Length: 464
Ligand SMILES: [Zn+2]
Image (cartoon, rainbow, N blue to C red; front, side):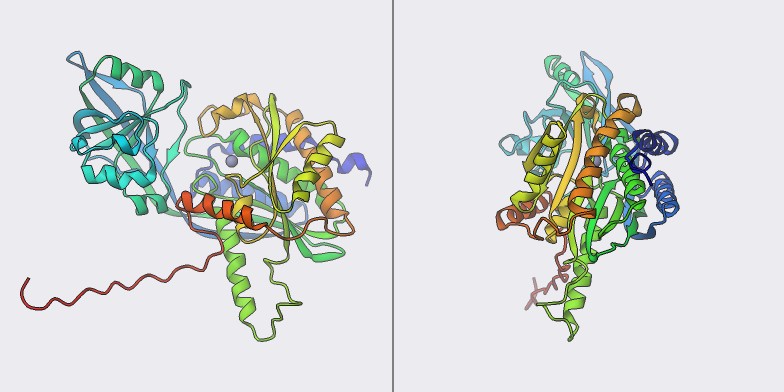
């Protein structure tokens, strides 16, 4: 095979992108769109001769049927464009109506008992951990004003864990100028009708594996999430990254690799990294099981989790006007390797040491170093908005990212005589990674599930 035949082809990648973002369209967690995309990716992996497996896990799919906000202004009811916060509580069919309580920025200082029975309006998000305080004051709903002047509103969704921890009530968001108008016109009352829906479903991680020739026990994950938010084509985020990953699979499947490559299309990233958390949890569970076997020798034997050496995660790609950003976790050499190759190729790529909010991070929590590679641009300000479509993306932009990723993986993974990076996450970074999950009230990947606490009721003596 000549180098030309195996080189990354942006046009081929772009066809995957169009298939995902246009033909299939929105790929919400647990929805038929997500399942269709999984079948498409699995088919492509199979055609490349990869060993395909799918990890199925329970998920919640959701939507909204109605979100109408009206305000009483100058004696007349006026409708204000509003976006539902998905998975927040629905109102009764006729909605809720009450006086407007303006809670400034929605910070703790502004959350008062006076909001009882009112519609709370705040410029900025009420933090999840402050929600119990709000709920204890008994308002009917929260409407948040976007603190920036942007036109479109991002799809907001409550994570299941989050609402179970902090409680739930009807929530919606409005644009900055609409909020400004409500305040300036001194609107007194508001009415919100919110009908959200949700259903138990399932999601699928699609895995395509190619065994290594020399060091088959060293596994490198090359991944991207393929789901999108509710009713959003998710072109740059992340049909773009998925397309790059799929074209890398074609290129790298067609030539020998010293190490085992696992191409993974993760599901349900947008609802809280659910796909990669499931993958990391399974690795951790298998490792705990392996270590319990009497013949397991810590000094020589390695669990499947230990054999994972690196994650190369590709999230948000394809915008014509954009700039590259790579984050990493692991030894300083991981960051240096990205910087070095980018300079050699004459490509600007900002490199930051931090956990990115994407699928490499759950694997880092179980000890696997990562590079998380993105391309941000003007159009990524449409992230999680309906405007995230293919118009702003191109095959050339995918080529730029793909050629870099291909060279990186060939140099450090498929062709390297020795693996360049230790399998290690330094303690200070592990602290940041844990903080990322705990602050978002997400379960820490790899942790043994806690047994439910047994609540002992005190036995009452005599009559209450
Ligand atoms: Zn993404």
